[in-house]
Image (cartoon, rainbow, N blue to C red; front, side, top):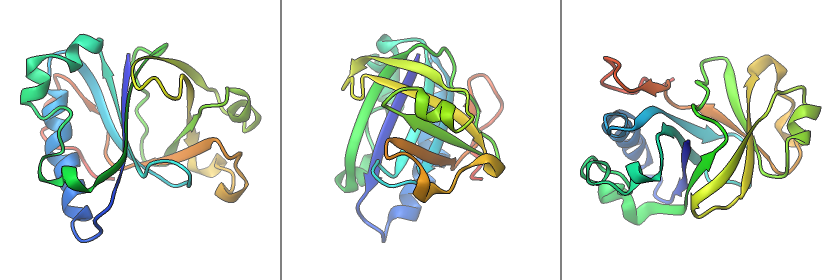
Length: 181
């Protein structure tokens, strides 16, 4: 299943420090939770959506309600919590593992259907919300090569483009930090 966490951050003075905390401490702690398989952070390049997106591949909802998840910082942004705005969490089925988005690539998300992504020449994967907010109920994601990205100002309103902030972490790897791209 795919677990998404979206938010914006309302304090420019501490945003860089918060991003370091999230990318270098929080993601490695979460990927160490039993049942987490991949984790990656993104920053929105398009408007009309929360600025930050984290996508995790997990076994299921019970992972997010477990003690290990809470002990390792799940659902908590520590001292930065007061600056978190537009916070949304969803659990989706339909995709077992999130694609790793690397350098030279973007992630595209649509909530209105696969057609806008298909018209851009992309291959969307469908997700259906099964827990947490359940909004949007359906989402489609696709990998986009930088060279094939249309001008952001000309994208359909419901397509959001994200650039990776970290490499995708995987469970059981020797990675102890999330490389900032």
